[in-house]
Image 1 (cartoon, rainbow, N blue to C red):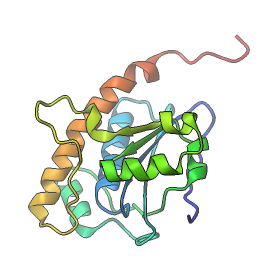
Image 2: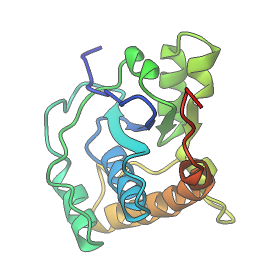
Image 3: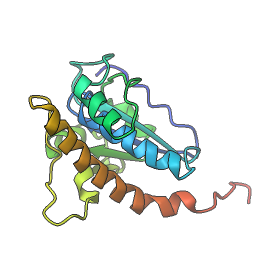
Image 4: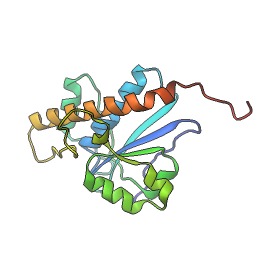
Length: 178
């Protein structure tokens, strides 16, 4: 697999959102979660990235419909560049979030051990909405309205994810010399 820059500084909780090509769903999730982290004043405690299971779009911008859907909700996706997830990324990350079960299976197959596997979660597992889908639908072959709908699904799940993780981020950091 090609290299994906995932350098997470020591003491920073590293999260990566993973979908197929890293141009639709995972960039949306990355940008939404990063915005939640930033607004909470926790950017120094949490690093959010994204990647794809495939290499088809490495180096490309997010799909224009992704950028438009994000912009309509006040997010800027224009700087995103697609990259591919690599096994070595497990060393830098604390949480690897799959956007659907296909991605989850692929990432699990790349995990080297139980520690790697324990870091993998499905994004929708953080959405407590009754009847929420198990997978975030792939909007790539659909219209702009589908991108908006997918973004709404991602936002709900990211809010749920952040609500579960925020208390740990807010906890005082302990010094190794304390």
